[in-house]
Image 1 (cartoon, rainbow, N blue to C red):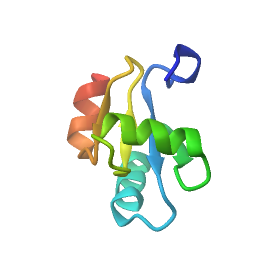
Image 2 (cartoon, helix red, strand yellow; image 1 turned 60 degrees about the vertical axis):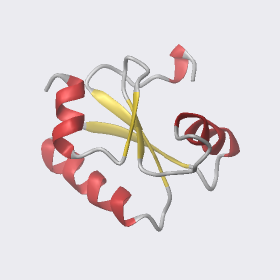
Image 3 (tube, rainbow, N blue to C red; image 1 turned 90 degrees about the horizontal axis):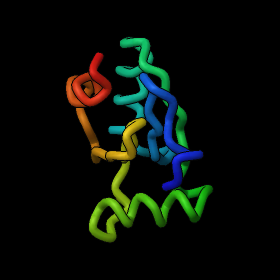
Image 4 (cartoon, rainbow, N blue to C red; image 1 turned 90 degrees about the vertical axis):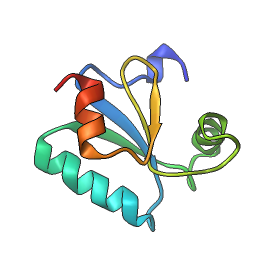
Length: 87
């Protein structure tokens, strides 16, 4: 992931799929908390799928959330996202 694709301060990039229940839950929680995010569907973007696999030991596990500092968490809770963003 390059700096051009890192999320803006206070927001995250969430790698997901359309059928992932955990992704839907996290999106609703982020919406409720007012935390902005960019969603990337790993089934539609081969580069995104490869990135997710690279940070998850070869597994295409979603949601994978990337933070402005370039760090990533897999299936984080809303509390973890808030802590990581300093919110």
